[in-house]
Amino acid sequence: MVASYIASASTGGVTPAQVIQQAGDAGERHVVVTPSGRYAYVASGTTLQGYAIDAGSGGLTPVAGAGVTGLAAEVTGL
Image (tube, rainbow, N blue to C red; front, side, top):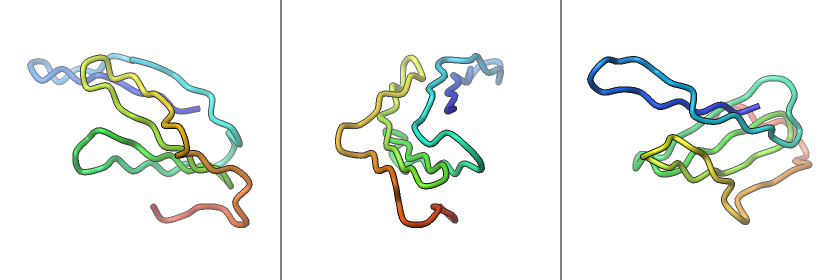
């Protein structure tokens, strides 16, 4: 499962935006957000998926062609 949140610049509070079930959804997860803040990559077990981040809503949209399942080894150290 991957969850996204919206942070309020004025209050510092966070509000849940979205929850996504990811293929291979088991075990430890690693998340990396690009320096631009436009994309996030999530590794879980032997699955890697890229998501576009909607800056307004905090929602995540899977990026076509940016998902890989059945990797030979678990992804670690992102």
